[in-house]
Length: 474
Image (tube, rainbow, N blue to C red; front, side):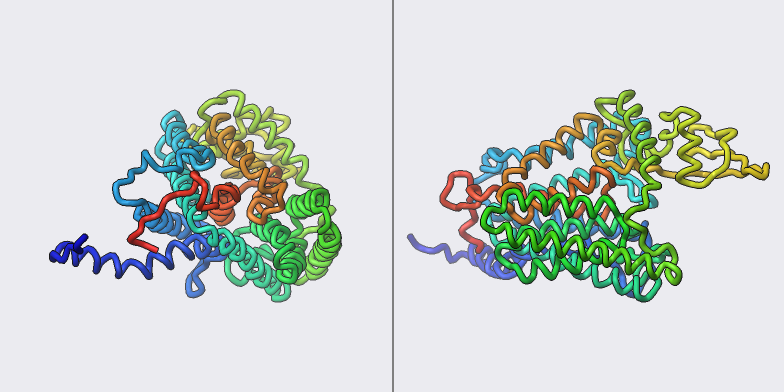
């Protein structure tokens, strides 16, 4: 068969040859780099704020999804179309797409449809467009790992090094007595807006390190030790409990490797305590440094917020309230006056509640009387439930929550095989039972979740489930 040497044919071959190197780099390194940047990105020459961090990661996600999907679509053999893609036989990406589509539908049923769609920058409360983007990112990562299995290992190592970077920055803040990146009076925060949010990223990294212990024991133990010290410094009890539970799971199913996980459990517990002692011991010199792991003052407020969430879900079980600030405007309406007063006293230190100003045009203004008789006015904006699953049910209804839980359950078989990405997902899933996901962690979590959802047999190119590739590209 003679080669077509016409000018159009030569032009196509030349363009294809120019694409080979950048395409190879993108398909192997795009998502490992993006997951690192989601957790660690900051502008060293600028003023890093909550709002700028949200906006930057939205742009980062849009660019990554565009590049990732473009690479995967270009890898389809000539004549293939999306409706013939073998991906349709894989449930996890279909669940992700269904979740993204459902958030768009639920936004249409919200009392604040535009805000539910776009989300809000100031509080980091994302809308349906963010979750639609995450669902597309899930598909792109899943296809990438399915076709290039080495990407999974790169993503795993990237998360481990992100944890080491964040831990180094966090411990430097404890020693320096101030935040080094974010303008915050809380320490340590690294690239996050609070110690609790940083704890979620550290939990992700430790969970990943538990999985690589069998193949990279030195890197894993160093990571678990250092990151656990930083986690202890945050004083986040939820993070500490999640990490210890994952290590306990590993102990139960590790078999002949049980000794390694016993050592890991000892290293982790010791590091958590040392980190917490270091942060609280420097508390006189550091504004609100760390918090004692035995401090239980927030438990009552979490229970009250959960009561508000359950009542809200009962009222709008199917579509929820929508994304953005939708529930932030109405949360207090789902508590009795007695419970609301208790919450405001415990969580904000307000006096006795005497009135509420609410014209249904934004967050409420509470009128309180202090013990000495003074009247104070407080605007309480955006109460998070501190349970991501209740948050999803509030935003997107029980349908949205069900789809997300189904995605998480799909990684359980891989977690029981002690696969690193799946263990990392399980660790964060436990953490989110008593916390909520902020923009840095959420972007990284969906990438890791997609990678963890690919099962080993699906990565075997000899099976019918494997995706075909374009012979014109590497």
